[in-house]
Every structure is written in C-alpha cells, then in structure tokens.
Amino acid sequence: MAANTTNLEGLKSPEILVKSPSNADFRVCVAPMMDWTDRHCRYFHRLLSPRARLYTEMVTSAALVRGKQLRLLEHSQQEHPVALQLGGSDPHELAQAARFGAEAGYDEINLNVGCPSDRVQSGRFGACLMREPALVGDCVKAMRGAVAVPVTVKCRIGVDDQDDYAGLQHFTETMLEAGVEVLVVHARKAWLQGLSPKENREIPPLDYERVYRLKREFPQLVVVINGGITTVAEVQAHLAQLDGVMLGRAAYHDPYLLAQVEAALYGEPLPQRADVLRHLQPYVEAELARGTALKHVTRHLLGLYQGEPGARAFRRTLSEGAHLPGAGWALLEQAQAPCSVAA
Image (cartoon, rainbow, N blue to C red; front, side, top):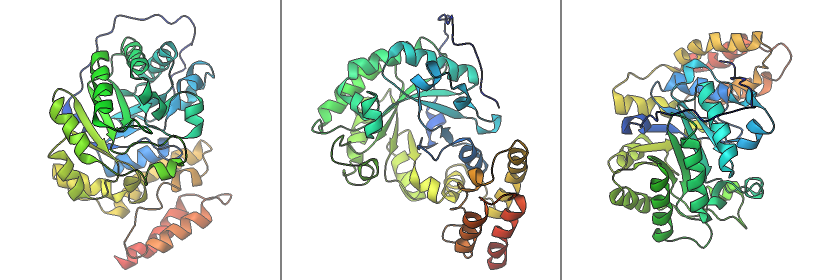
C-alpha cells in the first residue's frame, strides 16, 4: 500500500473514538529495529507468523511533519496488524505524525522512549525521555487526542543512575495518567554515555523480575516484555507472567523462530521453509517490477535456514548474487536448492 499523502496543512483535531487494545493483540510482537524492520522484512515475517504484531523502524515525527517524507509510511495490507513507531518529544508534532500514521492505516502508534543512540539523544527523544515522564505524558495525551488507534510506549527499566524500581514505577504511573494502556518494557536499563547502542543491548543486565513486578502492581496495564528472549520456551515462560513478548534480534537472525512460536501458542502447523519462499515469490516479482533491487528484500531472508543443512550455501548465494544487475527470482531458487537436497 502506498503511503497516505494527506496534506500537512490545516490539520484539525476531530472528535476521536479511541479503540482499546485487547491483551491478545500483543501476545507476540516483533520489535522495531533500525535498518532492519522495513516493509520487506515485515512482509516476510508475516508469512512466518500470521498473528504476530509487527513494528516499523522508528520514524521521527520531524521527518513526517517538517520533512514531509510520507513515503516512510508505506506498507502493504498483508502486514496487519502493524504498528508505526515514532520518535520525538514535541507533543504537537507527534500528534500530527500520529495522525498521518493512522490515516495511512497503521493499527497502533508507538512512542520510542528506549533507544539510547547518540543521534536520538541529540534530538531529545528515545531513552533520555525516561528522565522526563511528564513530557512523555504530554506527548501521549496529544497523540491520543489525534488518533483512534491505540497509542503505546516502549521504554527501558531505567536510564543511567536512575536505576531503581521507584523510577520505573513513577514513569508507569505517569503513563497511566496520560491514558497509556500498553507498555512495552525492554528489561535492561540504558546507559546514555559510554556504551554504544549494541553494547546497550548486551551489557546492562536483564531484570525480568522488575517487569513482572510492574505487571503485578499495575494489573490494568497490558505489559509486553522485550530483551534477550531467544526460544519458544522463554516466550511461554514470560507469557505465564505477562501479557506479551516482543522478540527482537532473535526473530531477525533466526526468523523461523516466529513460525515455531506461532505453532506452540496457537497450534498452527509449522510451514516448510521452501513453502514460505514460494509464498514470497509474487511479492518479490512485484517489487522487482517496480524497480526495487533484489538485495533490499533478500537481506532479510539470510537467516531462514539458520541451523539447517545447506544454510551456509543459502546465505552465500544470496549475499554474493542479490546485488548483481539483473538478479531476480531465479537466484532464490538457486540459493534454496542445496537446502532441498539436504532435506
């Protein structure tokens, strides 16, 4: 689906009938990941998991409102349920950006209060906003006043020296007062100085119990946990305590995990990896016809055969061939052939 190109001028706040989210809507989510969860990735993930809630890469409110880059909202109907993640700290600007997202058809607008990168900090959004819960609350109120779809927040358990439960508790209370019904919590704190974004995903220790405690003390809140979750068994264990689980890099590097989670939670038969690729063929051919280079799609497929015979040859064939002029569907058939023989 092409992005909605609604005029940016003259926006007025309509009377909004806000939809309340269901706990079941958030049982399994795929995290927003910069440079990874683009529209091609999300389409592929949807083939593996019919029910998972998918998230876009973070899009800044400034890019939509001031930069008028509404092309960033492009997505296909097959991706639903799909959420738009926004980054920003200006309530009015975020409200406008949220409205563009809702008009483009997104099922949820998520506010990023967890990213620790220097670029995000310089723009006064992401994890540094955990120090300003009142401002985040104002942003949420403005966004909720602009759209009918749920407005959710993704945060950390703390930031820098603000690393006690009381800080997370106060942040959560402020979010509830602002009308937040769904909180996605990365169960690590963020260090804004001294650690890279990659190190912030690995070095601060995970504290799942803090997130469990949050759910116990705020039972009315839909709480989704994120961070370090890599197996079906871990997903099931978290769901015994919480409303949802958000998978990040594990789902990207080993995307078949999404199908395994779907099978475990909903009884869906596991699809054959080769069948997943066959279902992807019409999408790939349509994208090639509109001028998309094959490499932009296949870079998300490299982990499909992770741990399976032929996986290395599959990755190598796609990595070496997808960027070449004229590369098309035949390359995926060539890449998959050793895997079929091994099977």
